[in-house]
Length: 332
Ligand SMILES: [Zn+2]
Image (cartoon, rainbow, N blue to C red; front, side, top):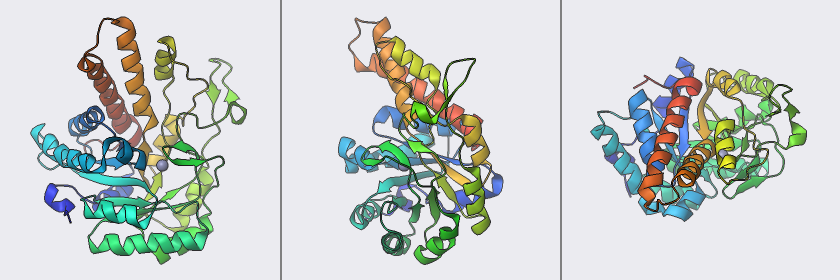
């Protein structure tokens, strides 16, 4: 049993309360490797932002759960080394798929877990989430539940269609489960292909695809039911077109990749939405930088030569999100 407090991590409780009050959102960035982790921590320290390090099932399979946990412990020390004496860092399980997965993360030092029962019938989602909450709260670990289904593909989480959260269900769900935050579905979507071209309109000036707007009426309905309760948005990458263009100009073939416009996320961050998950944008920034570097330097073969600009590019992206989209800078 590892106590996350002893390794300098925090849970989400105080962080979310402050974010809801302050009208900003905490960045939840996924990480799978050292360069992403370094970029996230450098960005958080430089902007004085709290940050949630997210680990998905895919990340656990790719990088090994034990290594990821020690990397998070290292991240706390690294932030201090970079000049942040009291970093606010959460180690969070993204899309926990069972009680056992959540328990193993809690036992190994995670400070927050998500239990995603959103694909289950309502009563089973309630029962599973409640069971995780009961165990997590014994260890002061916070729990994110999910109601409503997001479309898209994220590691092993995949749904063809989205189902918006029903605002009339949220009080019952939160009361019965005791969860600390709730992921809802209002039209965000996992992955870099959030919408089909048929779902989009075309901007006549740029010829780019414009996605359908988020369902702010559903968000407002949820806020009315649960005033001040921390709400989470998954699948909130914006899929920057310049990164997609760089990838395609250097041998890539990403077609019709579409994300959530940043002005909509900015609006959401000012509401009870206090955690916004961003993963695909960092993948795009990393891949664009690597493709560009290798195209310009065909003689390079030392991974540090192309991972260094990739890390710089991710850091720039994280700082941009923190300062210009979420507003979580200068909150430490
Ligand atoms: Zn997600």
